[in-house]
Image (tube, rainbow, N blue to C red):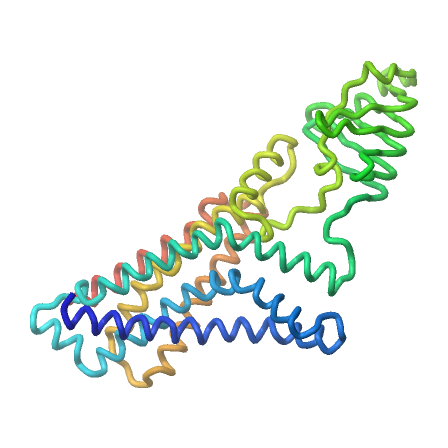
Length: 358
């Protein structure tokens, strides 16, 4: 490693952490505003407030990494351009690609780090944050051990209604099980029972006072309780609506497979799954844009660089958000919504970078 490499590495890392710190503090300040209100209201003490903020750090890191890379690249290279160091290097035969080699490698490593956070840590810490908010702020139970009036779609042909479900006891009361046709439009049969007991090892339910109503014959008949086989996980029965950001990527994949099996809508989960992958590499893409724009020295210094970073970064966020909304409505494919902004900005970055070579 020569002096040039050490000079670029030191200056780039300083600029990156400066950029990260600035945007990190902006996100942290936004989170702190509502947190202060909760502390004043007595819902959280100071230590709990700091813990709540800590749970939000992985999400803040994933959101600020592309902006940090973009601003860090702009600050580092524009400083060198202002001091005519970029021109001097080109004159002495050092290419712009050679100057940019470490920032590009570093940004790729940052993208891999963000991908890991999105894959594992994001869901886990968002879950802790959600549970703390549910318990302390909303003052409700984060995980339901029992519920009244449960209505759940079990698979592509079955709907379960129960007046009361208790996980600890493994019981259901006031039960109706609707068997639908394949198009899920008409009811073929309805089974009713006063209560049911769960075998927790096999997920098989035993019913009491079981009756069958046939919609075709309009007849109700009593059924031998032992002859009726019904399997369903009590966790699936008691499950709250899925919040995709509270899941790790393996958990997201499991939910997508399960929702597909039961015929439920998994579009939002698919969008979140693929967007986590594409957004992780936004930092890598932003390095090309930041390095290229930084090599063109303009008056205004740091203020212009910060303004450019905010404009470019939030245009990426805005474009991605619009496409995800359109994809959720089924207008465009999910893959296009998740990866088109990344590809477009990468092409723009490469074009700008190529122009900076000459």
